[in-house]
Length: 262
Image (tube, rainbow, N blue to C red; front, side, top):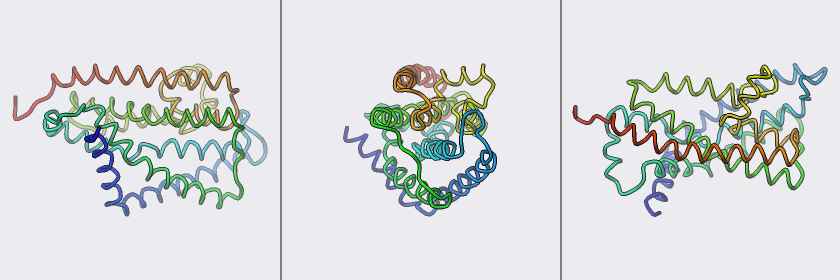
């Protein structure tokens, strides 16, 4: 466990070392968030659309921002470059599990992300005038569990997609494809209810819904406790499937590893 804790601390230290870059990125995200809030305020000023009122959409966007910010200091580019350069061979000789080590790195920066989320949400609420209604006891606890499950779920989706570098010569295309699919099917781009019914149903049962739609719907109270439990159960199921599925992909990926031409 000491090795994993050391990796987690190293991630946090690296983020704090390049804090200007981190703050600059958060500033850009804040501008994007405020712009989205302004656009949806205009759209929903007159009447609700697909059941979403302006206060509900504002809360949805804030939850979507928080969900998108978590596990963002994962360093998928670093992992991808080490695979493409063959430096991943050095990771293989370390007495730690590769997948668990990357998870430890992703968790290491969580406290920094939580502080930034609190700051950005506070600024966004101040600019848009007013707070948001929080769910009652059981729903609030379910929302917390959903956000907790979001951490390993997001890590696994990024981790599995990055393992594709064992079969590709470039990571940018993989990342762009992942971002496009995740933003659409998670509800980060627009709530899933705005999608065609067949696509919304497919997305809701996919692992991507657990990244935004599930915690947001629970927070807004658009699903009851029973339905919320089902959605959280889907999140947990995908975490387990992807965790063991990622280990199978890793075993196959190692057969593609080339170091010094051999």
